[in-house]
Length: 572
Image (cartoon, rainbow, N blue to C red):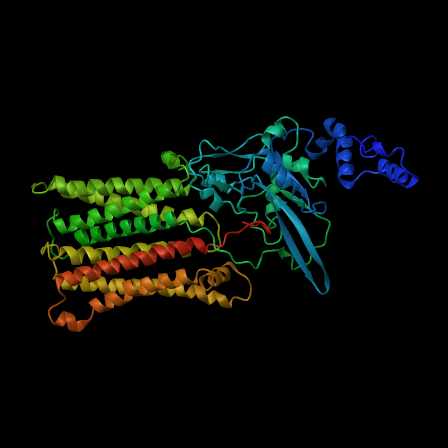
């Protein structure tokens, strides 16, 4: 870089002494920007000779070890150079971050305050949840380096890895329709250079090291990487954070008390509600037809076929809705590939098997109508049992999809009860609507008088809705929690940012699942001979539509209030 002599002062040689003194001072000194640039150029030869080699191990990992980030928190100033370098090197889109910087704060009147910058990226875990959960097998863990690598060409954009990763590392790029993440600049490591983030840090706060996998497992037993970070026992993260500071006991992320909704995933909410209703309604009608009625009916009775067809079509509609969640829907066929480890793949296979067996069951009804074949009953029973079993397996897989994320509000008991009640409630609502509509058309549809069956369905709908709404209302009890638990955060969302959605959910549930069934159960009307068939069908259909809408809103809130864990201070 050229210094100032011979440039700005060249024309002042014959001026008076004051000007000459100023020029001499200008020749002797550089501005702050010039000094920084000159220092960089003076250090460049040293960097080229291998100064940056101190930021990475001298040799590649050996069996039993892997590469890992090591962060010196005492050296980190939070300048964000690592974020900028990562963004530039990987040509990331606006808003796409593979490395982020958050902050920890702490301090009381008796202890000094703390403001600690925390840079974080992918932790290249020993047991990466993103890899195990991916239905398209788009992740792999390099056996030699331990780096968790994402394949853009295999990704279908389902975004399930963004739910399973407790550190919210994978980033969904809407413009590309796929997820992308940090790969530790594996191309630079292979060339003997450190990652861009490590090389850009002006304080050498980030470096690459090799860690023993056994040591990582042992260290993960003690809890979390940092205060309030997700439990390390889940994925066994390899990143090491070092600090000589004595942190206050109340050290917390800077945004610890912030309460934000998660993503709502409307297409997934619709898919879950419709598929659970389909499985529940098919199972309920199968049991009613073969095992409950005291007087056997013709196996080909049209009324039952209408119910089974309605159940099947709703299930297919629900599965179709899930396509809209994919960033790359044309790659949806790859979703079964991860069936060995991914509950999402198992759900897809279970629903596909349910649709196939249910379709064969319905087809067998029409194909053999009017034939005097006793063996057809056995075939239909086998197909029916298979459809019910595969549908139940698919609902169980749906439960496990969210349990596997280890989010505090998505426990097995809570999620299983939630999904099971939805299936039971909507199956009764659909059965009520179909029965009220078809019983006048097919008077032999029910062995008992239609009004008796409809009243039982109304009573069941009333009971299930009451249980469902009561359980959801109990979530507000956690507003009394003394600490900021995940349940309290969810309750704060339901009474704050999401209050109108919660009110609408309760409104549709009460109107469709309590008021209308209670009206249809009113004794004076039944004593007078029953409701008019058209009114009965309209009221039952409206009850089904309202209850279904309420359940979709409930499932939407299921996602919005899930309270995802994250690294300290990471802003979304």
